[in-house]
Image (cartoon, rainbow, N blue to C red):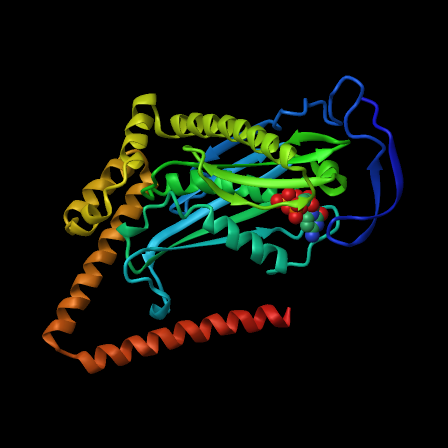
Length: 352
Ligand code: CDP
């Protein structure tokens, strides 16, 4: 396909003045975009689960020219203990772009952009992760962008969903994400890089299988009618992604029956009161339904169990009052060590 481009200095949406090829138009006379897609078409996507042996769950995703890997560690005990949430697990999400992932090398380390994306992406999983099962623990999700071509935050969320499922984390359902935007006065689904950088609007959205929106951000301007239409388009895009995720789960866990069992075990959430009443014995059996379907998930199950035992031991010791002072001071030392090592790492990052 012939693409006309204007070579020159342009200000991209990050306010940087860059030499680039801004396309003269984004949609041709046949209604096709520069990469040959229709306006309501997403880029080809492939996903593979269980790609990292040292993570509890992982997923590698390619979406157009985007390449993203997501890794999940946990649930595991959270240190320092003051960060623990007494009635639920903390889900920490870190989005990071590799220095080599874009045309101009990105400065390694956290940035304002990656901090923002990490925060909103972690929150996108809040309605689905059944946090009540691992109070005081942490689940770490790392999303590493190896190659970026617009839509990396949505690509990372799609990969992270399957990495969480791979780790056997109890979830009410999956999360899918996709962006919609506007170029040449028309709405387009799943923006590619020129559309993202030079388009009139960019609207990344994540949602649950029930259509509950868990992330919504927007750059640019859309009219009210355009916004309504954009949300319909993005819903269709996410439905396609749910289907791809479902297929990936099937190929990971064997048969359709397995996946149905998995979905069955993660779909229903106990009523709030019921959840409180769950005894220590009942919780693992819920988890077993999920973890039965994957090897890595079993490891998580063990660590969750071990953590519960540790907490029970600790409670017992505290109640009996034995070694209370020693225990407390030991913990303080451990927490301080953790904090100190955190600071060391931070100091090293700063130096870099
Ligand atoms: O990737 P996503 O669309 O979620 O985020 P964005 O902030 O809208 O960035 C769009 C694209 O711009 C990224 O996917 C990268 O390809 C590119 N980008 C870049 O080249 N340099 C940056 N510092 C940030 C993004």
